[in-house]
Image 1 (spheres, one colour):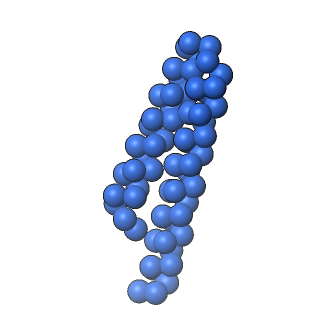
Image 2 (spheres, rainbow, N blue to C red):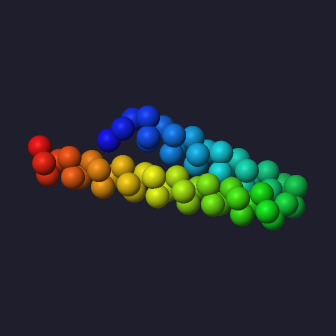
Length: 60
């Protein structure tokens, strides 16, 4: 697991939540969708890191 990769994914998730919230406040559905997309990307990155962790445990 790379702490840097996890931190980047967490940052992307936070950005996505903020963008989604801003889109809801302003009524901009495009920003809402982009924010949700960023959150999805972050979720995938976290899942990838989880798999890496599991593989490392098996190897060690």
